[in-house]
Length: 330
Picture 1 (spheres, rainbow, N blue to C red):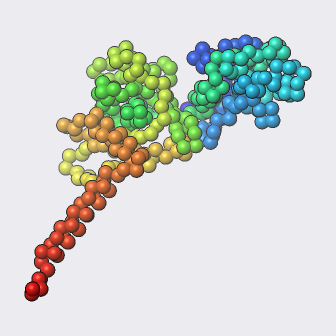
Picture 2: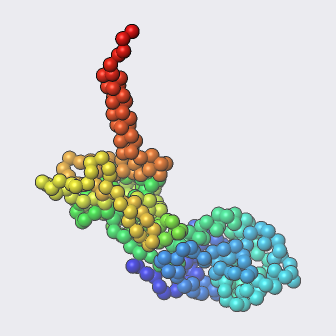
């Protein structure tokens, strides 16, 4: 477990990516050093970001246009409650959305209480999504998985297997076919919802892929920026393992070797592919992804094949009984 248990400052969690998040600091710069405590890795949800709530405040508050209109008058009841909320220390930063501007009293209060006040041209719904995603990345304790993580046909696929089996070569082939690299070797993982885990790469090695014989490749430089992405949900795990000569696989030939793998209390399907000379693993991984997509739409090719075979047998049996039945005298 790569658990970042120590508190994280507002500057590190949000301000460091202010431009990318669409934030402009307007007041409360003295509060950038205020800290936020990370949530456990198995937290069911991230409660760091919310719309301005005076009764159950989250550390990061978004002020939408309706709430903004009720804060213009400093003598209004909402304004007085916000003042008390700031003094309580429950709020670390406030973002005014939709190109609105914070009233002068709110800016002054932010400076006095050390609460960072930001303006943003983004809509409140866009801000919520971006800040929630950022909070999940920075403020939930992480775990690490080893493998190559790609987005293949918009499906997040983690390719795992023993060292030297060819994970990077398969990834390079898939990237050449249009897939996107998320992370190589070490994948940082957090629980982004009760039913989903998301993986990403540390900034130091983001966009790089190590391939035996070629060294470290800059994927964005070779294939373009669209060949790299920051993060993706982990939807499928493809595990590569060597095929042992002379040993027959006890698993049925018709059904894929799929099991459910539990990561951070979340179930992720894992399919195992045998590595042997002459097998095009990139094509096999791509086919595994296509099959996974079929399963998501309720299609089971194995069941469809068995059903089709059974219907054919029944049809032939009926035809045989009809041809073998005795005819009566006319």
